[in-house]
Length: 55
Image 1: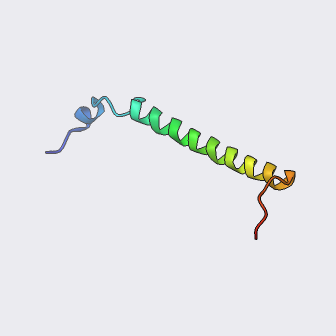
Image 2 (image 1 turned 90 degrees about the horizontal axis):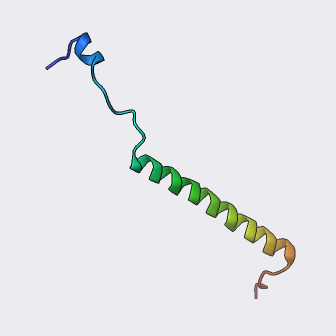
């Protein structure tokens, strides 16, 4: 079944912000922040001399 041009222009939906979209954006932001936190902690330990010696 094909829609006419008039019928296809009357279709509404699909462009809203959903809970799933917001959840995925928040998870991505939290992952980005965790990576920065781990990288900053490792740099602080490396330059601060607080790392364990390798035997």
